[in-house]
Structures are given as structure tokens and as C-alpha cells.
Image 1 (cartoon, helix red, strand yellow):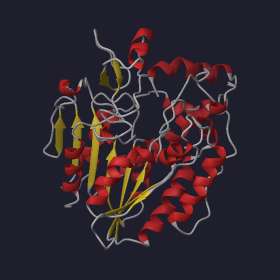
Image 2: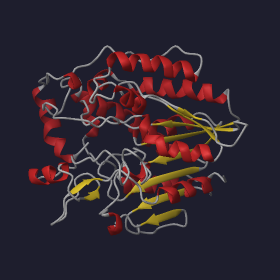
Image 3: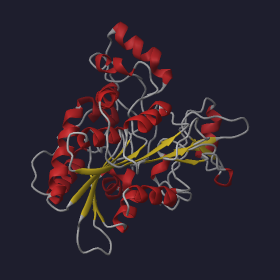
Image 4: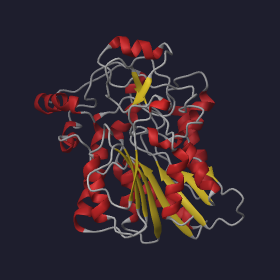
Amino acid sequence: MKPLLLPILLTALLCGCQSKISHPLMTPSSFKPVEEYVSFNEYVEKTAGELRSNRYFLTDNHEQELKANLPFEVKPLGSPAQRRGILLIHGLGDSPWSFVDISQSLAEQGFLVRTVLLSGHGTRPADLINADFRDWQTLVEKQVALLKQEVDEVYLGGFSTGGNLAFLYAEKDNDIRGLMLFSPGFQTDEPLISLTPAAALFRDWLRSEVPGTQTNIARYFQTPTNGFAQYYQTSKRVLDSLEDDDFDRPVFMVLTEHDSVLEVNEIRRLFNERFTHPDNRLMWFGSEPSAATDREIVVNGRMPEFRISNMSHMGILFSPENSYYGINGTERICRNGQEVLDAMAFCQQGNPVWYSAWGYQEEGKVHARLTFNPVFEQMMEEAFSVFDL
């Protein structure tokens, strides 16, 4: 949630007026979270049925869209015994596709990898109006129980809000061997995030705007007020927990200095003070942080050879070879907080651009969102070192 939404949020609370937007993306469907299943395959099949019935398709390739939003499983490569498993949890407004590259790397290391689809996701942004973080927690609990039936060791991983959900489960279950947290959403840089639960009672949307043409099949570009409110509930519980207790199992964490969503310096502090296992590692994209410790790996986020000005919140997740988000991928996110409309048009026309986190601007350059990680392989090797793989 960006600081520019502060006046909108305050207006919502003061006027108490509802916002109605007439567009299928902004109108809830009849989607119902899948709750009854006895296996992961049944969970996927039932979820597929709900998506087929309720997704507002953005392209003519419905099967590709379904694949990007369905939970999936990747079995360990070259390993007959499924000794180690991991459940990966996506972020707010995202999809299981967030882990399409990470899952392959983990499978190559002998993991049975599974992903989930959080309720309110995969169909249309308006379905987050009825989402509840407690349903997300219940889903994680059920999926961990299924995974425990298949493997000896269970790990959790998460991106952004999914990192919060992974931590909140792991802190209560000592059987979880470790965590992989990618841009974990422990704390936002939005000072009035705590007002969103109240604002959601009065306004479904903080911004009353009809969506333009959208073709991105793997994430939402609108988030209803309740989506922010449910994220806040997970963040508050993480911070409350870490205020009182340490977490002493292995953790690999990735943060980017120019993250436009998170208060990364505070999350870094929590990592150094509250995550106490000696094998922990934090991979930091940006300039050398103050008082860097030997548990931190610093990668310069500015990479001119790739036309990268800085690393983005989501960019860490994807390999440069990713067919959708990679260097030569088919999807370019031109909507990147540009103040000049000509810059957006320049990007959309396929002209050469630079890449950055949301909102970054530099004179003489047009920036699209960075959606790939040039050192993806190094990141995964650092993750494996934490867990002695």
C-alpha cells in the first residue's frame, strides 16, 4: 500500500461512503474456497473447478491462465524417497506462479514441493472483498498436515504476505524444520495500515477507478480495502510474536533495499535480533547496509548490464530465463508508478526500458517493473547452504 493512498484512506473513514465500480474484475464472483479434500490432488481438482466457473479471463488462452493460478506440485528430481517437503505460500494479489522457478530449484535438491492458492485469489480482485486471513491460516494448516503424511521433514516458504503466514504457522509447530522467506511482509512502510480494517467496513475500494486493459495472468493489479486489511492482520500477529519471542530454527530471508511496499530496515533488524539460529542468512539487494553482519549477503541492486536501476519486491522470485517474466519473457509490467503518461506509452510500445522497483524514477530513463532476478541461481545456492543441502 503506497503513501499516496493516505488521503484516500482518511477520506473513506471520514465520509463513510461506499464505492461501487461496475466492472467484472471489481464485482465478486460466486467462488467458494475448497475446504473438503483428503489429498493434495483432490484439492487441486476442486480448485480447478472453482476457477473454471468463476475466473474472469483476461486472455483467450484460458488454460494458460488456469495453469498460472492453480496450486501445483513438483516431485523431487532424481530422488526416489520423498524425505523432505516444502509448502510455498504466495503473497497478496499474487498466485502460485510466484514459485514456478523456485519450485524447480527445490525439486532438484530433493524436495517435494507444493503450492497453495489463498482464498480470494485466482478469480478476480473483487473476491478479496470477502477474504479472511483465518481461512488462509486454516489452508496452511491443512496442507502441512497432508505434507507430513508424505515426507519426514517439512519446511515452509512464503513471499510477502505468504511469508507472514509461513512464520505464523511455524512458530506454533516445532516440527517445521525451517523457513524460506522472500520479501516477507512483516512490516509495511504504510503508517496508516492499521486503519484498513475499519475502512473496509465503509469502502470496498480505496480508489474508484475502472480497470484499463489487463493481460497479466499471474497477479492482480487492484486490491480491495479488505485485502489490505487482511494483510495487516497477518503483519500485526507476526510483529506481536517477535516482540516477545525469538525464532530459533534455520531461516533464509531475502530483502531489497528499494522495496516499495515494506519497511525493510525494520525487517532486517528483526532478522538480526529475533531469528537466532547460527546458520541463518539474509540476502540483501542494495547498497551495503549499516553494521552488516556475517549472516548477511549483500548484492548490489544496481546492475547496468541488465538495465536494472534497483531490485523490486517481486523481482527476486523469477529466473532470467522465465518464459513469462524473464529477460526475454512475454510479459512486461509497464505500470510502474510513472508520473508522465508518455513514459507508460513508451514502455507499452516495446521500446528499450530500464527496470526497477515500483515508483523509481531517474531523469532520461523510462522504467518498467523489474520481474526477474539476474542472480537467481546464487540466491538459491545461498538458500540451500542454510539448510545444508
